[in-house]
Image (cartoon, rainbow, N blue to C red):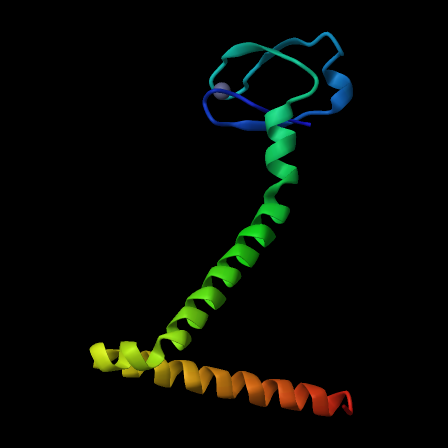
Length: 113
Ligand SMILES: [Zn+2]
């Protein structure tokens, strides 16, 4: 298990070194002492939840991005009429869509579909 001192240093200790009822430990860096319980919920949570959160956030970002592109596509004519600078955005999206389409085609070809 990992225990942390208030000075920011973290120590990897063997679970058997901390009894069920806890014990006093001392930091080897700043000499601070504290009472350590065997199970540090915060440390366990932070180390286990990193990757699901990362995937969920990426998925959320992707959905927002797709929604944004969808809205932009829905109001394409109005937006282009009012903001001619958006022409750059639409050209970029068209090129991107074309690239994705080409990639998908070659992917399907490799699987013989
Ligand atoms: Zn310390």
